Image 1 (cartoon, one colour):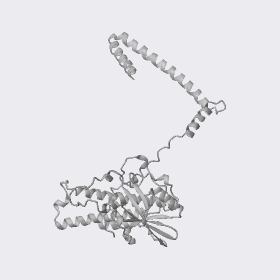
Image 2 (cartoon, rainbow, N blue to C red):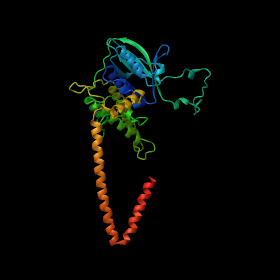
Image 3 (tube, rainbow, N blue to C red):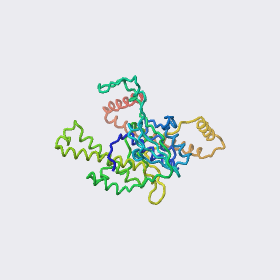
Image 4 (cartoon, rainbow, N blue to C red):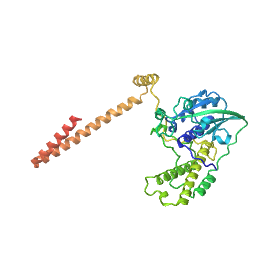
Length: 379
């Protein structure tokens, strides 16, 4: 099993790209259905040629569109080490690899973080270890950039086995000595943390269906365990377990946390590579999301259509249903007015009899009337 830590924001963007991208390549969803995924906010995905670093596509929708037109059938996410595909420019980003599958070949794209060549420029001041940056880093105010380099084309198909989620859950529970999935994990799909709370950009981290419900619960369980461990071991936490453990106990706890991170990476890769968006009956299950896209902007054609509808409603040849509704509404208003007059008359007669019997009641009645009259004028 892989034992490796990761940068969660980077790998989550890869999970979104690969899992939703596969469904797009297979014609199950359209780009308009998911390209606004909140996990991809503030990030740019660029696709380059490895030889000359030429920019092939500056957006993942363009990249996916070209792949689909070229006959690609699916995507899968792996560690670059599995292909012995380490690239110096990709090492800094964790060296993930996205494989594009074709009927007779597969294409390997190494995922990493691009580094400026001027960092090795002979005039660049080498003042490492000073405790402060040589130049102010303005790039930290911009969004992250995930760079993908097309490494090579290989003949034949790459086998990506399906995941037995029940068996995987048992293996994780045995290793971490904790129930997986946890009873505290939500039953619905897992939504990763979003940089902006925009309703129409809230999608599950990977496509949700009846078949993948257990995968979502496993992901939610591991995220909860990582969050709890991070909170409990915070140096500012007075009940930090490291403060009460000897050297051997602290080493065991550290090994346990690394196993947790390793299982998280394992599950993320398997979730990205899950392509069975079908339930057990073989019928496609629609992607689960909590909100639809924002309504489109009104156009000139929409305005003309609205004006035409108004003209058609007022024309003598239009259906008479609207005129019938207006007639019914007119008689209803008249009956309501008569009822209000009758009730008002009864109230006035009752108040007059009270004032005649008790003259002092005229003072609060007039005060209440003036108060409401003044309130109505202000509104």
